[in-house]
Length: 295
Image 1 (spheres, helix red, strand yellow):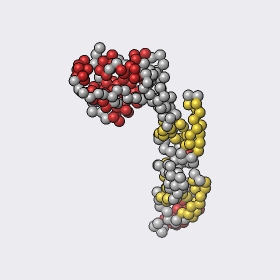
Image 2 (cartoon, one colour):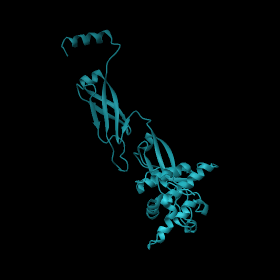
Image 3 (cartoon, one colour):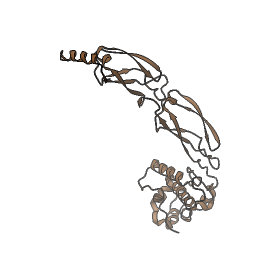
Image 4 (spheres, one colour):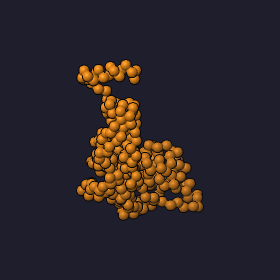
């Protein structure tokens, strides 16, 4: 039997932290899980190797022993007998496929960590698989919090969609992943939101942005315009001599702030002065008169 490089199996280096090990394990376990690779013997083999590597590297005692003896693992038992302190075996992992059958551990694992692992493996509780899902919504759908029912693996999940979630944001729903094994906890469900902007506004967090075409006469003389917001129409006063590109802020007329009930961002309006076209002869004459004043 050959030495197995568990760090290589999990695609990490020997300086990896517990967080690094956990992240690498979860990523690879999802990739090679038999449920996602039916009838793929290579994927099943890889999945078992990943679980075995995690069984060792996620347990501080096993990892210490593995790092200490490395390729001298054949002599590990002799070295261990020379020590008076015992070692605690068997730490639950994350995903699993095998329910802890004896053949799920390699001969290398059994030789280095003892045959007792075979018996313990049958009683170890394993966490269920995490699930991932994408939920597509329109921007107007998330103006207010609302409930929605998802159908996942023939199971209905009722959840509340918070107002103001971001495009690409992921939320976790604990316990709604795959079932645990041997009484282990269920995995979690991770939902990633894909938000389509079905409005004329540009969104940046809780703030909204909009450009408005302003007639030249209104820009020069001032006046009043009607503006569409997400809450309906509002009337805005335009100051005389408003310049092209001027910006005004409508406080509290933006988007709801995520998980801050009753709080909203602002709406920023940029004026684009619309130049007149197809002038009548009379209008042209009036502009000629204005030109004489050197405006």
